[in-house]
Image (cartoon, rainbow, N blue to C red; front, side, top):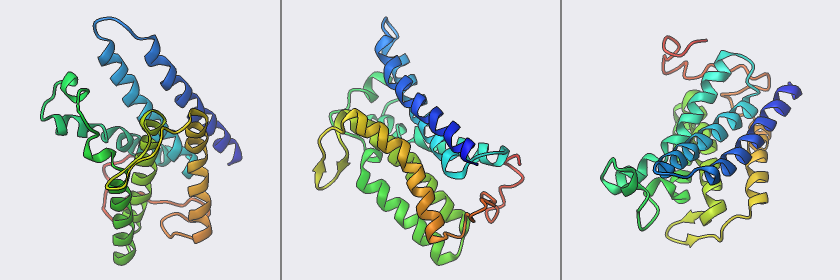
Length: 209
């Protein structure tokens, strides 16, 4: 169990470092496209390995959960195209302000609402989804925050997060969430990690076990 955590933490750290280094090596006519692709895949990789750390993924179930978390981490950037009202990468990269899903106020509110809804309805899969969204979206915001700070409308933005703090927070976040979930005994994940992702939503026939 500890070996899995160490392995995924190492992969998480490596994803952060490589994902932030590789864009600087890209140039040429398609530089923006490659940088955007690397950036998006890095967001997805960070979310993927963060969830793998959290659930100590050891089987296909953990892999698919991690993959969903990774896709959620990448999906945030779709708001660039929504705000630009265009599928043009140049238009998406030329926005004058941050698009709506990059608001930490909004994403935190959505995660809290999801968790409270799951608690009120006694639906473990909704609470699981809320934690997955929180980890995916917050890791995305923290990584972006190393360049532009965190955005909390209507309060404003924080200063840019120092790189060492961004990497440290990213690596510690899944461990802290794991500890809090186990301490509070949130019922979608027992201490032995017996999870049934989206069982109540009857997705078992869609996601391989």
